[in-house]
Length: 477
Ligand code: ADP
Ligand code: ZN
Ligand code: MG
Image (tube, rainbow, N blue to C red; front, side):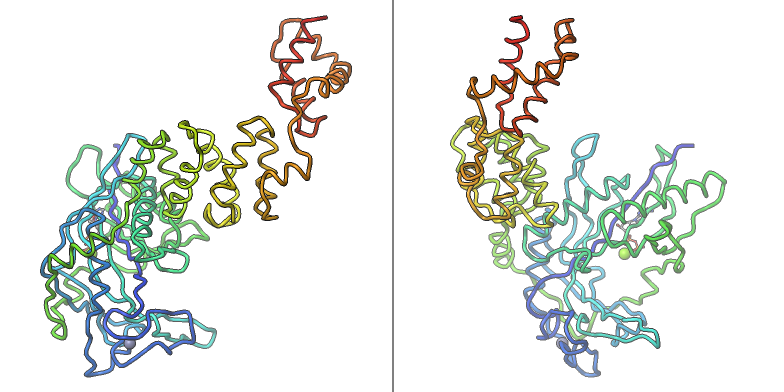
């Protein structure tokens, strides 16, 4: 029997508000343990929480950006459980009246565009952090009370690749909104994955396992693939999948059962009597809407229409807002209607340099006019494509301009036929085999000879001119 994977993701995004969700402590951590704390986030008896309105406006922004309907009335509930990093014995979360309901995230799949429905977006507080030492465990409560948004999908995802695409797109959108840096390594984005299998064509859902402890998008993908194999094997043998929480172990590339999955009623959710129902007014929604920048999807569509880039290229260029802004400035500086040379440079050598240095396009320290100067040197055949890549590296390291580097290092392309004639004569003399091949009808042999001329000229010969000269010389004799 063939099985289909059914996946739903629960993503926690840590908000970058200046203060915590329900007290005025700074929402910063990683500093001296237990310094950013007060009676409220320490959970001391009698301390009263007060909602940070910025948290609500972040929730509204994210809800709007995902196409959700913002709930005019929203409520906080206590989610009760015991853990040493949770001194109150409950987490303030939202149960049946979340901030936003019903949106979607569009992803690219091999089968085309697909909408992953977003079930809900709700606000909650983070817990503290346990640090395990040799002689015991320590609790740091600086993170307790830091605001989070939980974004939950419907079970619309059908493969590990789709899960990866969803996470990438969601992260891109949330980063555009500027409400979180979404850095999974720092824990400001966390993802739990729910997965079940069902026979292809069946519409009922199978029993799911919940996967935790993945610390990169790649780990989410790997954990899901691994879980698909595990569940397939169980079902094929006629067994049934247990409803449980499993931990991903990246070192062993395996999931391990942690506990049987708790149900909502295990948490004894009830409305937090210290916090009233919050009303979200139209004016607050409109203010949030006005603060939403052009989002990646719209920007990609505009790049396609305005600059003639392909949808694949637009996707790459708009994933990060700062890259998209940089690309747009480059397009504006480059006068010609056909932006292809610029696009190729941006998603080719420039992005490669940025990736290898772990920064964005702008982080390379090259201005859009500076980059276009380099693109134009290639366009005007003053330097070859090959040479442009080494000029680019020097621009990044040396902080000088492309024209200056080409001048001082004498990199201009040799298109002057008399300067090339000598090299060509030598190459023809030293590569008799290729010359014979060419004359025997193997027209491809000329490319090898072009390569030899390029090598001998240290990449400075103009390959087009070289090819023409070679072909003329070869057919002359
Ligand atoms: P729980 O109460 O166990 O947290 P929810 O209904 O809140 O379950 O759903 C949590 C996540 O699990 C959602 O993203 C949802 O889409 C997904 N999900 C629910 N049922 C299944 C299933 N049978 N298989 C895969 N994912 C599921
Ligand atoms: Zn506090
Ligand atoms: Mg749930």
